[in-house]
Image (cartoon, rainbow, N blue to C red):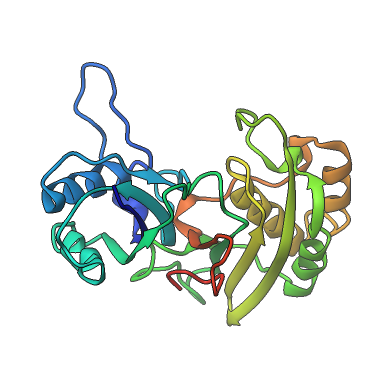
Length: 264
């Protein structure tokens, strides 16, 4: 039976995250996996098991989530993404579908992932919080110094124990991860973009990194605080977990991929 690899994009505001959730004695929650599975089942005319690479939280977005499913179908592979998307609500799309190797595992096989966190700083009446893009940009009243944030971000690069940048209930056997890049840009006056890529990420890790860079940028802690957190693993030294709306899973790369930026 062929295995298909799907590249999925979604605006996560109205979803309870990616992972299907079936509370006892209550209807299933609206999740990306659930909605996508229903659409794929309708298109393929048989129940499908859909596996996603990254369990994004409620309110978090994606342009390059990767999922896999096994199915026999007469639909040409170059039409499959369109066929499924036609049965999806407007806040989720299948951007690409292709045949994958039989042993392709979207969870176990990634070699890197990339996230973007968008943050706007504004103090009314001089500046205003996000309005038309309020679902995809987080807001702060703080004035941020981008050079301080860049200094702190550079200290995250390489292999470290990121226990201090993870939620207490992260559920992983090891907290050692490798950060390949972490760049902070002021893309417009008051609009900041934090781009992070790495071998993998712990629960809430990117949102905590963003929160820590926010605290550095507003002068509450020095850039060298990053070194203390990495050395000691103390979550209390890191910044807050930033709101989910600013976070987007941009891409996931697998062995043999020609480009890291799936779905960008």
